[in-house]
Image 1 (cartoon, rainbow, N blue to C red):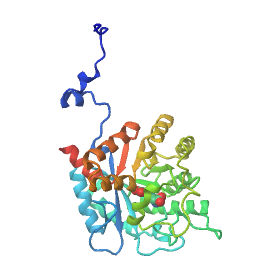
Image 2 (image 1 turned 135 degrees about the vertical axis):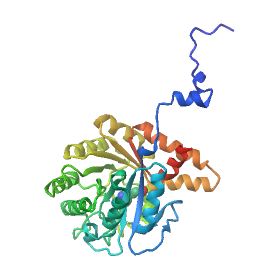
Image 3 (image 1 turned 45 degrees about the horizontal axis):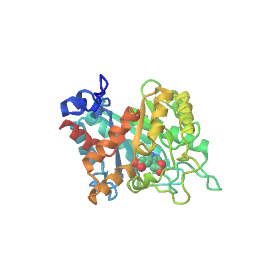
Image 4 (image 1 turned 45 degrees about the vertical axis):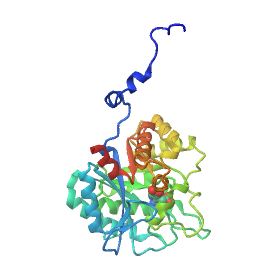
Length: 330
Ligand code: PBG
């Protein structure tokens, strides 16, 4: 056999031991990069497990406080809160009730953690409307874009006043970031409240389990009149650039695992702090396969989350946040 040309490339030299692999690892995942989505439901006394999302529950304010203490002990310092109100109406008016379930939860968590916790709130109406759409409806059943923006602005100001750090509009209305930024600034929150925009959010089947947890499934139709077509990546970048121009502080791609190319492109195109939302269905399917013995839960979940970071996300929003952080602690 001919001698190998010198120097021969031998990538396996750097894969030989766990210590060497760790030394040359390109991508890191640390607890401060994880965001835990949490559901707080009005009118319950104890946490109620969500069947389709193992390890996830709808919380009472008390059980939420316990959960966040555990997350912080594991090193997770950011949470994204969703309110599940007991009263819904056509307008979704509980979303801006100063004593709404979300606002009360925010005050409780701020009291427990002060500024050591990054408190983010989902700013949308679908959990608050009887019809389950992300804004008020016109007579023909479509969502009224500008009326939705007015409502998001009121909700955002009310979340700001309750004490969040970050409001996070997820309704995919045109101009929603501008509307919210303007309202926050007028209410005196120009310097304190950041906006994390679900700028690039697809009309996805992977939101299925979330709709059980947040009790927000549309009562008719679907969200494809406002959320994006899964086939579109260029448009995803345009949406990100638009929200950046409107004043978003953090951008988001959602879902994450099925849209890693979009995560990468949005990061490249904007250079903005970027979150990617590893959504309910992406979490549930790994659990379901593992429960059948078809996948190794720990390895598959960790691999998914590092992949999202590798694609370019700074923050990973995931129901596995606490579990992952504990695993990282060793
Ligand atoms: C809308 C919202 C949804 C999710 C987050 N915010 C549902 C939807 O758009 O239908 C989904 C999150 C998940 O699936 O984990 N307020």
